[in-house]
Image 1 (cartoon, protein in one colour):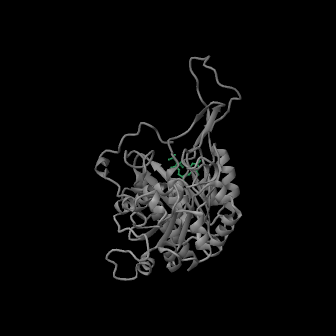
Image 2 (spheres, rainbow, N blue to C red):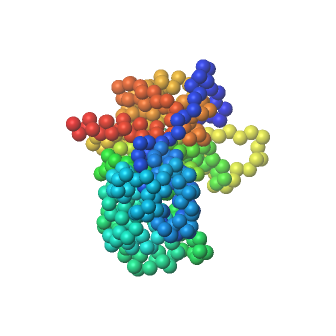
Image 3 (spheres, protein in one colour):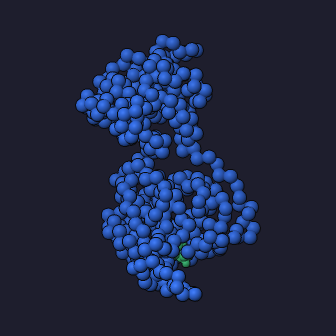
Length: 424
Ligand code: CTP
């Protein structure tokens, strides 16, 4: 198990470098439709965050929205000309709504009021934003936000259902206190939820029809009811593997050891604590999985005895007897179902490449992703990772320092190559 006091491998300091920002929407254009709700102020903040994903954000406001937030705010935050109505666009050479509708990869309406939802559900086009919606043929995401009574109204609910049947996507609002002080469903979701919906809507669904099982996080091996042995795994890399698969259209189940990371929307989570619990649940869930990713840092040893009561300090010394846990990855390889793809991860503090090649041969996985956890800028507790992708034939691809979600994308690209080879 990794140790807290790991020292950098001599000479490895030269690897320290800044990871480039994670910009999965590089080269894309998002139309941001802002309608007249109090959450319009949050759209200002989100517009900046969407832009940070690498995309151009073109804001389009309804007249009512401009009463909540000034158009200048959006123009400044997005660096774009502001569009508010059909006939008044400075310097336009072509019909602006058609031109905008052609150029965008996604149309996000946030906040979406009951009014715009009703109009879009019925194909009404009486202002610039609703006209643009009709002219747009790409993916559209509505993020409703309104007073809970308005949201719960049968007319609004029927309109939302109608939007879905028309092929529009709807981000479910959150339950809580809305801006008007009422409690209920109607709050604009947190940025992490909106971010995932945007990434899902703009990612080609190359894993549609695939069942993916991912394990993540540490395990806890209990000595008594209050103490356990564990490790520094945060779970972030495993969650990133799960989220990338979900964005690409897979059905994803995540078996997670204790991790303080928000639940990724759309992914089924099975929480576990011990290596034994992880082994049991993965054994069951692996039956239907096309791809299994063992990102979890499973404990190799567990106390031989788990005391029923708290161990008291009434002896000068305490020795622990530990017994080996089963190696889940090796078991999965031995009982492989058909042509399942099985991927392991390993964390090392020395001889990364040699250890990884030895491990993939020993365990028989299709790919092993190895990272050097002695580096301060990669691995535990940081958003970035620098990994080697080792294949079963001993081929090694070294990736530079990258955001963990980008590492996830690169690893999934390699898994998809293996899936393609299988179908050829
Ligand atoms: N693994 C597993 N079951 C275990 C231990 C590890 O399935 N009981 C899996 C991990 O999820 C990972 C891979 O094996 O995908 C490599 O884990 P790692 O801890 O690096 O290797 P170990 O086999 O535990 O070897 P060591 O700790 O001696 O380096």
